[in-house]
Length: 300
Ligand SMILES: Cc1cc2nc3c(=O)[nH]c(=O)nc-3n(C[C@H](O)[C@H](O)[C@H](O)COP(=O)(O)OP(=O)(O)OC[C@H]3O[C@@H](n4cnc5c(N)ncnc54)[C@H](O)[C@@H]3O)c2cc1C
Image 1 (cartoon, rainbow, N blue to C red):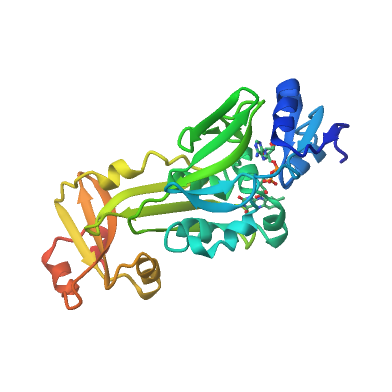
Image 2: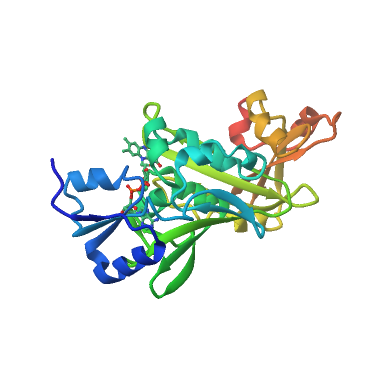
């Protein structure tokens, strides 16, 4: 199907974009990579009067570290995150998620900001941004707002972005402490949108304990399952320590944890899991037998 007729403009400056959005409001649509908007136009699910292409606006691309944050320009492409290997060891979850987005064609065109603003519940960046506690910088003709990821996604394809606003940057806090995480995605076949996916990001304190943690998931709203559960001093009434299987040791090594053990804390009905370093010769097997195991481990 052909899209309904619309005017197209590609301004060279952000101020011009903001003034056009101010003038046209709901009748205007911002175009970034076009990987979601163009299909919507062709299906006539969207029929804007004017499409404002931000592809020529300077300063909306790139990844840099500044003032305790990793700052990602809203127009930064998925493939640029995929190749930002210096984020390894700090924001592993981003590097694990980026290559799982569709195929190289989509990753070469689609942008991080476009994906976040599109707010597809099966999209990958939303879950990741919730897990890392990102903030979104948005601009309009009347000024700038900084919106936390938690609360930004109001529902499927619905966000807290106003019609006259454009997202300019994603800010992710990074402390001095060790951090790690990962992104696991279940898809029907390679390159599909997620059936379900989970992003996890953990920051360790100086004592090796978890200082902050975040979890985000696609297709399900789990942002509340974050730091408060994992960071609060646990009332332990049951613990189990065991060695992670070989392939599960990699994230621990990336986070600088040597001789990793998985500690399961059962706290008032909630199981939480902590990866920590053990003494090299600690007999984890013995510990395991001394402690009462939860039923689902007893069978093994
Ligand atoms: C075949 C296919 C497979 C895909 N698979 C996946 C997948 O597995 N995982 C995944 O996460 N995504 C997937 N996508 C979506 C892809 O990642 C898109 O690139 C992304 O969702 C939108 O980014 P974009 O830059 O193309 O935005 P556009 O399509 O240009 O815009 C999308 C929406 O966001 C708005 N917008 C864009 N940028 C801004 C901005 N800076 N400020 C304000 N509003 C803005 C637009 O107005 C529009 O409403 C897939 C897409 C296709 C076509």
